[in-house]
Length: 374
Length: 84
Image (cartoon, rainbow over all chains, first blue to last red; front, side, top):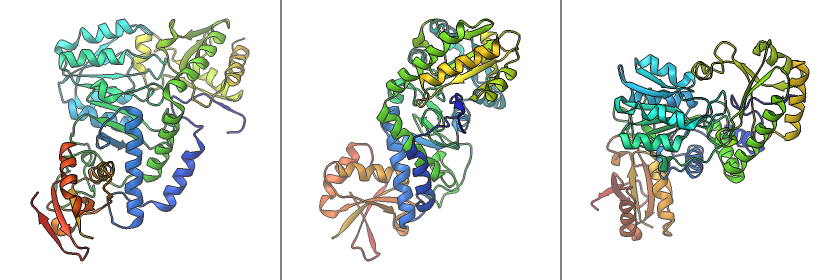
């Protein structure tokens, strides 16, 4: 990527710990299919997959590693979770900041969706909007952190409200996994889906679905278990893991999980929040630039949106690319978040940071935006 | 040495069992289950020395990880199901 500064980690972290690519290469060379044979290459794969589940269970607060399912992406996990709990006509409450990975599967199954649109960066209104809909709800689906605005929704309180109302909860932790402390068992959600390739620093093509109990999956096939039966096993993780595992991806994901655990999510969040605050303060004083920053920085993670009056967001994104900064412009696959924040027509330019970005990069970025806006 | 094999449907459950046995000093490994002892088809085992059977099965049950069945063998390819 040359000297370009990468600020699109909400899509995919590009800078990974060196251990990730090393683990993947080692996996390609040495690992076969877990659970599919008694030979040494299969047993090495057994061990690698198990160690990845253990690493995830320690980072994410899952007492039973069997309840950690490997998926191809957060979208894959969300589809499994939604199809497990939601059917045609189910009344589903979602936040006003959901990604298409939630809204499209809900539409596809014919759910009756109610958008709980609390105001941007106002956790109390988010909680109230959800609580006020729980009496009639069959399920709640919320993202933990908005991929457009970095807004941290009050997940613990939402989960408590769902438990009190006996309403199942699905959490989209795509933007929070690795960047915010998570404790799945304590939260009491039914499912939590996350990408492996964002804040967990694994490769693309990986994801995790944390499950409270076994359920039926969306694909069927070989699992290396209960092979005489023509139905899927009823136990986790096998029930949701048909087909050969992505072992290079799983090995890379384990390396990413171990990096995050060693560095600490609180430390990563603190670093990313400091960078976002620096960017927000620098951008806010540039004429014609509108910044979507939380009044209280505790309500925002490592994502920041902005617009430049009179300039199309894609144009701003192109100019930044030309200046050596990789950002994302547009709707970020989350039109409902823009509808809630009243940015659906304009879209936004989004910068999103990782543990590898620096203050110097952010200062250079602010200078580049100033030059473009002026 | 004579071994007992704790049979699980899932490789992950067998791995958890093996890890758990290790916490009380029982050397254990994971492998494919004997075909003739795998009622539903392919399965996986956590292995332990037969002398530690009582301790091992007690721990696995206590930790809510009971095996589907338990078999024993001498390493000659023949196995016998145990009632435990």
